[in-house]
Length: 343
Image 1 (cartoon, rainbow, N blue to C red):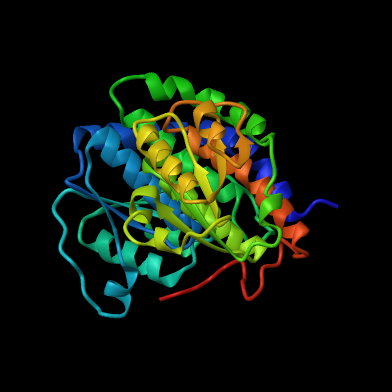
Image 2: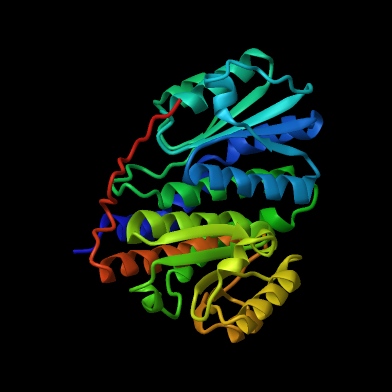
């Protein structure tokens, strides 16, 4: 019987199809408001995988709309009792599967009280986070039984891309969105496996630009479901110290797509290959795959704002299979529960 982790990952294309359909009117209304009154600052609040989705939003909004985005440190509010001032108008995007973590909820309440427009991208509509937010964009993922988030994370990325598509003045991305669910279904058919990692103890996961947040997500999933110590990094940041840990055969997972960061990332991978790293490359790009010791071929690509979703969609079944190969139950990571409450 397939694990819940795998089954829920495979449900993600239908989830995203439903999200794009059901959230359309609310997203269009929100986008019209924000185009008329663009925020001077965008704040994000999230934990765990949701914080990787928030980082994805930062890259999209900064690169495509030139809106500055700042990730809140919830402990500044909850433990230090401080309320940093923000310019007006500001926007706060809160990302959560459960909507129950007290620190994220408290951040939303505090900044809504200051007049910040608060938007929750949340799976549970009957949650404290949804109740505390002015606008709610449901993820429509349904119940997630596996501890590790899969379909809800992909729904967060899709919701972010949908909002960006309606904020942009040109129709390129909006016209590309309808193809996303089918492309995600096809992305489940990545060619290759993570067999090289069956006995591994450590790994670096690298991305650059739009693929950096999904490299962080890949590293987290390897920790959670496969019990593998994996560190996600920007490929640029990796060169500023962590590469000192490289030795012959050290596994490095790279997530590569064909956007403005491509050439820089390929140059970094060439350097790492020369240093003896074992490159596992997940990509639709033939040049990137040619550098790989373990190629993981994604069967297609979309717009660069959407291909990161395909990379994650293709990665989840690989991580689930690795967990089983390492003798672990991917649905029950050690020491973890589905809902984590921090303050």
